[in-house]
Image (cartoon, rainbow, N blue to C red; front, top):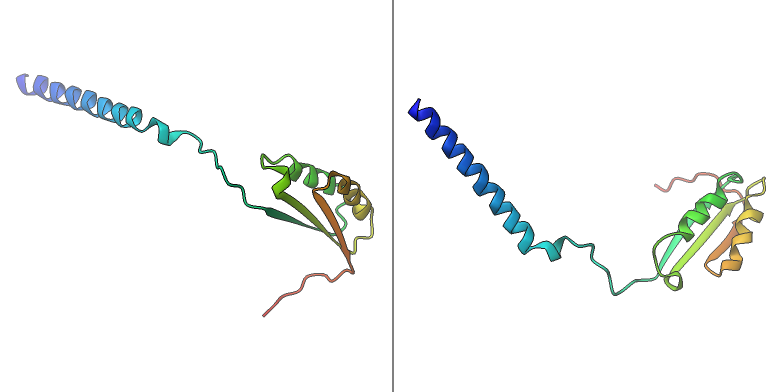
Length: 114
């Protein structure tokens, strides 16, 4: 009976020790757990390939425009691969934002480079 009480006491003590240890580690490093805010933002370009995407192109462009990134550093390029629907016109309507650029090319299909 005495050994069972000793075992329970040791387990209880170790549990408290480990809990206090990790709490102290967390508290001493709490500034490292914050979401770091970058001071530098490189310019980025997002390429959106499109072929007959009339139903979804507007949502794709809007999603990119909603990114939490400085707008002056963001460029969205939509490449219309010869769509036969209204994809080009819908994408073109976003050019007035100054962030979106729409390019149109003749349909080339999938090409594999070896």
